[in-house]
Length: 344
Image (cartoon, rainbow, N blue to C red; front, side, top):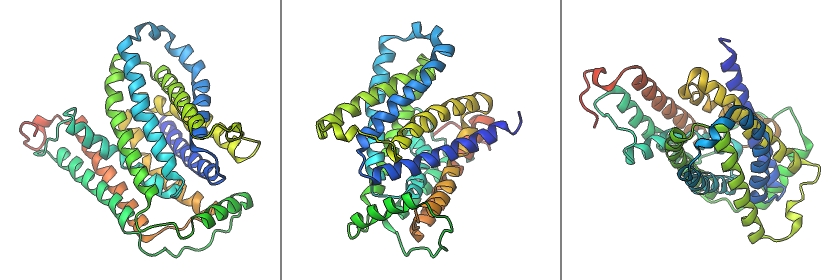
């Protein structure tokens, strides 16, 4: 079983990359992001329900009113807000940029946890210094991607052609011609989505200690998110036509996102966390950036700016600095590390 968790996590990241590609194509066809999120959430809840019934039914009696309230609040202010900002931003950016900015989450989580005094800075230790420096590098990388697009990188054309994807991407590009400003609104929304998700992670850590049933919690949150976005969709556009998925890319996207992108990947990640811990799982986050860049270039003819490439490298470097700091803290207590004193 030595290499199995590694292979499993590589498969998970490939699954996330495929989800980004398909969801981008769906949004480019004009699909409502509210319908996309609602359908994905309901399907994911259905996929996880049998697993929760088998493994966690004995824990359902421990679900208190406080836990239910916390799940509802975290679903609305964390998952729903994060999903809304992400998919609204995703409409006007590329899968590669969205994946790169997604690597901000660990650094932002550390920043919010430190501000909320859930985690100490420990600036006198190498681990604390690495986490702070990594957070600064991550944020700097996001600012580079946001403000310094720079020239397009000259990359040879892809020999692969998916005519359907090319037509959708070309139609979306023609609509967006002349509308892109120096600062991409899509990139800003993706960053705000990362902030919301990081805040959700900090809050969810406390909830999980009171109700240790991750599958059940995810099902409840998915149902809440699905209902909320169904209501929002009805308020924005009451036409029944917006819910028509047809038999094309929209249907494939919501099925893939619900079954693979949220259901199967969650099961695999939970299994890997039990075997190797959360840090092991986090180390694979940048893989989705590489896979997205390759798929976007191969099938969508995605163009990459110099600023996007430099910013992505900085974000990934900062991510690993934060992860290194977390790993060092887990291995060596602060009071014995490098002559450290009390946490700052």
